Structure formats: C-alpha cells, structure tokens
Length: 420
Image 1 (cartoon, rainbow, N blue to C red):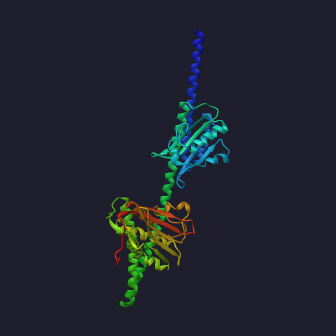
Image 2: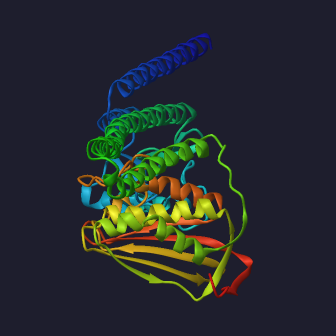
C-alpha cells in the first residue's frame, strides 16, 4: 500500500515537473516571439517563422494569418503553412463583414455562410482536421486580421494551448498595428515634404508675376496699367484662393468652419462654379460642355461653400486634362438626390487610388496638379451637407468622373426665375 502511494506521489511530481517545464518553454517561446515581432519593420516573415515554431509546440499541422486589406475592404491571406500554395489560395480573400458575424472565434462556429468556415470544413474533409481555433487580431477595437491554428492529431486544445495562441495573436496584433502606423507616418512625412515644395512653387509663380508687373509699371508708366492690371488681379485672386483653401482645411479639422444653410438652387451654384474657373478653363483652351436642367434643383446648403466644392472639382479637371481637352459638367435629379457630375478626358486615376486621392496632399504620381487639398476640401464640405463625393475612372489615360450627391430639399424641383 505504501509503495502504491509512493508511486502515485512520484507520478504526480513528474507530471507537475513536466507541466512546469512545458509552461517555462512556452513562456520562453512567447518572450522570443515578442522580441522578434518588435524588431522587424515588416512583420510578415516574422509571423510566418513564429507561427511555424508554434505549430510544433501546439502539435498543429496548419496555420493561417489573414490581414485587413484597405483596397478590397476584406481580409487577405498573409501567411500560412500546411497546405499546397494552390489550395491555400482558394481562400486568398475572406469577406470582412461576414467574418465579423462570429467566425473569428473559437472553432469558427457560425450559423451564417462564411468563407472562413469553408476553410475549416475544407481542412476537415481533405486533411482530417480535428481541432481548429481562429482568433481575431484587433487594434483599438477594430479587427485588422485573424490568426488560426488547426490540428489533425489532437481532439481539441486545452487551456494552456489556448492561452498560447491567444497571447501570440495579441503580439501579432501589436506588431501589425505598429507596422501600419509606421508606414502611415512615413507616408504622411513624404506628403508633407511634397506639399511644402509644391506650396512654395504655387505661391512663387503668382508672386513673381505680380513683382514683374509692378516693375514694368514703374518703368513704362501709366500706359502699362490696362495691360498689367488684369494679370496682377488674376494672380492675386489665385493666391487668395490658395490661402483660403488652406485656412478652410484647418477650420474644418478644428470644427470652426461656418456653414450657413438655406434653400439653394444647385443649378445656379454650378453656373457660379464655372465662372470661378473661367480662367483655368480658358488658359488651356478646354472644351466645356454643360448639361443642366431648365428647372431649379433645390437643396439645403451654404451657397458659398457649395460653389467652393464644385469649383474645386472643375479646377481639378482643368489641371489634370491636357490642352484642348474636354470637360463635361452635368446636373440632374436621381431618386431623392441632386446629382452633379464633373467628367474629363484627362490623365485618369489608377484603380487603387480612387479613394486615396481624397486624402490631404494626395496627387497622382508624375502629374503636378496643385497642392493636393482641393478634393479633400470638396469632400469634407459635401459631407458637412449630408452628401457624398465619389470618384470613378477606368485607369491612367482614361479620364475621370466625380459624382457629387446632395439630398433634395422639400421643394425638390421648381421652375427657374426668367432672369436666373
């Protein structure tokens, strides 16, 4: 009897020592993983190496890492192991919204059809998968990816294994979020430098023209005034507009911009916007085609701000369309909204830039079109009016189309005044 008790104690001790040893090994592994993830600029290779090492400790044969893709607004396969590449690429993209319904959880249990669950079922059917956990990667409460492990040799994962995977997922989340922030900071710094250089160029040109104009008047006398005065006035107007746009961006960012809402005829706003861009259109001999309804399109808005927003779209089309190019401006009713379209046959926009061109200081590479704040300002103004502004293009060299939508006011459409 004593011998049996002694053997049991020895067995328990060995089991405890084995458990402690396994815990120490896992703690050491997590410490090394954290150090590696914090050192690398691009975490992709580190994630692959760490997860492959974790597979051995977890007795797993599969792992999958998906990261949020800003372009597709879905989850894209970043790293994996256990499947041939051609099979894994069946699941290259996962639907982000469906995944959020509950698939990024233990065992990927979800009553809804989901490609993430399809992945688990595919592994179970083809490779005898018996255990699978999928953890969300999060940053500031937002899912930025998933990390999952699968095994065909164990019936499930105990608390220790679950803790290892969960902690590893937390570390990977931090590394990915840090990489994104560092990339964003570098991009912001690059745009800032380009903006300062462009701003200096944009301000220097009109200042040089004004400077030479005044010197010419001093040399020639009053006879030069009729010729030089319109030039100086145009350059001053250009500088005032640049400064006003910069100030408005700052006011919107700090919530200090004033929007005085009233019933506005959007057709009249479009006409005033074209007048504001008359010099930009004429200077490059653009062919402007107008398609405006004979009735007024009534919206609730600030007429000054709406002119500013639409004028920026027309001015943008003028800048990015070569001489003798074509620009169309169209206004119409579509459902319960007023729609204004500014279309050109200019340089076009790459598919992956249709959203980013609305960012501050953003420009199409290889084309100088100003400070890169006009589109950002236009979208902000339109959104302050409860509307939307979207871009469309078939790509570089295929022209661009900007669609501005605003809710119609209760009056909707009215007959225009004879002198409007």
